[in-house]
Image (tube, rainbow, N blue to C red; front, side, top):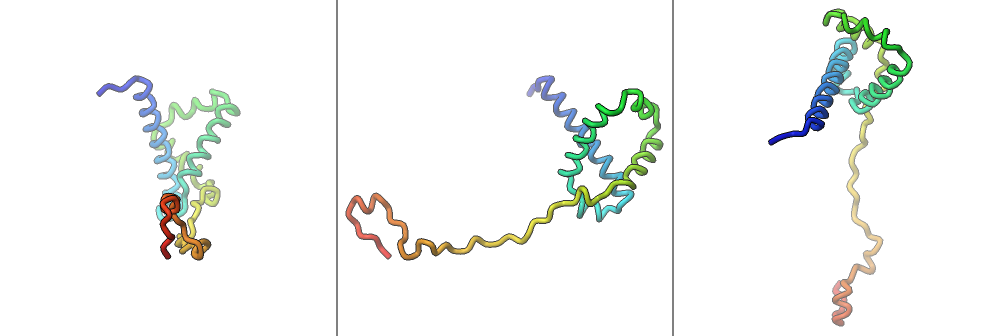
Length: 129
């Protein structure tokens, strides 16, 4: 099976994006607790915020501001991520809790006049109760 280069590139971009999300969640788990992150954090809201913030940062900050991150060690980058994670307000990314599911119940709107097939009416059959 062969894949076009564009499809392969798209897959690789998706892998990188997933890894970024996983690193951000790991930093948040370290600072706010694993249970809190798993129970309360909405990945949907978090990913949307990352996308919006990234676009703004690319416009507002010149390229020179990002050079420092290129030469950081993994430990230095981890320390910065943990510092940033401490300042995250988790209520901004709270999951929406769905209410209990209600059964639709029986519709008695047409109980006095139930549906009768048009074909039966054309054949002259009487509606049965």
